Length: 279
Image (cartoon, rainbow, N blue to C red):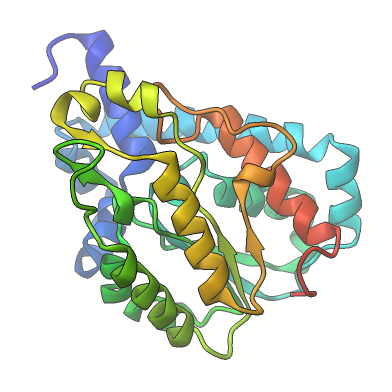
C-alpha cells in the first residue's frame, strides 16, 4: 500500500502512464473510469488528475514536434493516406500514454484533422511475443490499414541473473514474430526494434535488479536482428539509429518522455524521408 500523498501520486502516475486495464482485460473493454481508478486503488479524482497531467505533457510534446521544420515538411506531405486506420501493437514502450505512437497520433489529430486518420493503440505493457499472439483477435476487429509492431523486449527478460534463461527463448521469439507477421498478411506493416537498455541502471533499480530481473543489450541486439530477419521486405525502424540516444527512466528499460519524443521524431523522419515504402 502507498504510504504518503507524494509517493501515492508518483506511483499512481507511473501506473496510469503504462497500464491500461481495458486493454490488458479486453473482455472488460467497456469498464468506466471509476472502475479503472479502482483497479489502481485510487479515487476517480486521483485517477482523472493523473490521466489529465499525462495528457498535458503529451500535448506539450506534440507542440514541440509541430514546431520542428522536418516535422512540418512531413505534415505537408504525410506518409499516410486520408481515412486510414493506423494501429500499434506491442508492449510498454508503445502502451505508454506518452509513447511515440501517442505523440504521432495526437500530432496528426491536431495538425492534419483534414486527413481523418484514426490511430488505435492496442499495445499492452509487459507483453511478450507469445502474449501478443494470444491477443491478435483485437487487431482483426479494428480493421487496420497499417500496423506498427514493437515487441520482443520482454521475451529477453531474465529472472535470477543476467545469465538465467530468457522468459521466451530466442528460437520461440523468432517463431512468434513470424506468426505475428503472417497474421497481419495483406496489411502494410512497420516494425520497431526494442530500445537500447542501460544494464547498470537496471541492476540498481530495486524492482528489477533488486528482484533479480535483468535485461541485456546483447539480447536487445539479438532481438533487433531477429525482427529484421523475420520482417523480410517489411520496413524496420531501430531506435538505436535515432539522431540522439534514447533517454531512459531510472529503471534503465523504459524511455523517458524525452526518449519517447526522440523515437517519435525518428519514426516520422524515417517515414518522411522515404525510408519505408509509401503507406
